[in-house]
Length: 381
Ligand code: PMP
Image (cartoon, rainbow, N blue to C red; front, side):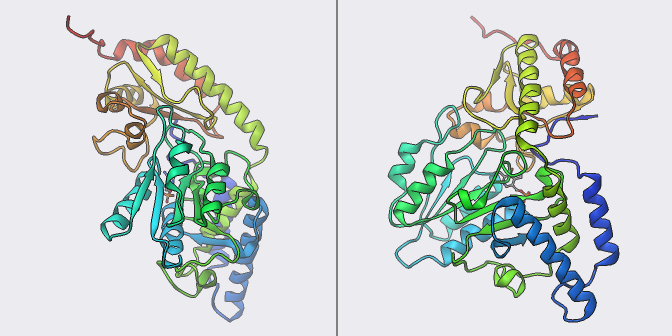
C-alpha cells in the first residue's frame, strides 16, 4: 500500500521508536519522584525540553508538554480566556480551524462566551479586512491555524499577530501542520501560544506541546503540579523523548519542501491530464508543499477513494477525524464551495517517506483508475 495521507499522520522514524523503547525500559520512574530513579527521569525530561526549545526557538520554560495538539489548543484557548481581564470575553476562531477545535468554539458559545469566526475567501486565504474589523478591544483570544490541514493554505500569522497586539488580545496559533514542514522560531512569530503534535513529523502519537510565551498567564483546564502548574498529569516521558528525537531529525526543511512540492506538482499535472473534470482547490495561493485537495468531476470522494485503495493507494477525503461522516468539509463550505462539490473532496498528502517511485506508481495507475470510475453524466438537456 502506498501511503498518501501524511496530513492525517506520519510513520514514526526508527530512531524515534528506539529512543522511546529505551526510555520505557530504562527510565520508567515518575519524573516528579525525589529518589534516584525519579531524578534520572527528571533529567531525561529536562534534556528533551531543551532539545525542543533549541529546535523551535523558545525557552525551555515556555514548553508545556501535552497529549497532542487537541489538548494544547484547549489549554491555550480555555487557559488564556480564563486568565483574561474582566472586560475581555470574546474569542475569535478562524472558520477553517481543525474540526476538533471548532467543537471547542461551539462549547464555549453554548456556555455563553461570545464567539466569532474569522471568514476565509473563496481561495481559502483568511479575509484580513474582516479580521481587522473583528479583532477589537473586547477580544480575549484569537485562535488561528498557521496552515490548513486540508487545503494546505498558509495563514497570515504575522498580520493577525499585529492586529491582536494592537487590540491587546492574546494570539494562539495552531501550528500542527506547519511545525516539521516549514521553518519555525517561536520568538519570531509574535504569538502568545503555539500548539503542535509530534505525529505530524514522524514522531509518536498522543504527545505534543503548547509553547507559551514567558509571562503570559493561563488558568489551565487540567491543573496539576507538573509542567510548572500549567498541565497536570504524570509526564509521558517515552513519548516526549520521541517528540524531541523526531524534531532533532528534521534536517533541511527547505530542501524537503522543494522536493515534496516538485512531486506534488508532477502529480497534480498528471491528475489534471488523465482524469475527467478535476478541480484542485487553493492551487494558486501559497500552501504547504506536499498536499493536494481536489475533486474528480461530480464523483463523491468515497467512490474515488475506494477505487484508489483497490489499486494500492491510501488517501483520504480530508481530516481523518471528520472523514467518517457524510458531512462535507467545513473548510470547503467556509470557502463557499457548494455542498455537492465539497462531497467530492479528496486529499492527497505526501511526506518525508514519499518517494519519486510512489508518485510514479500513482501516475502510472491513473488510466486504470479512470477506467474504473463511473462515467460522469453530463447534465440532462
Ligand atoms: N490541528 C490541526 C491543524 C491538525 O491537523 C490536527 C490533526 N489532524 C490537530 C489539530 C489535532 O492533533 P491531535 O489529533 O494530534 O491532537
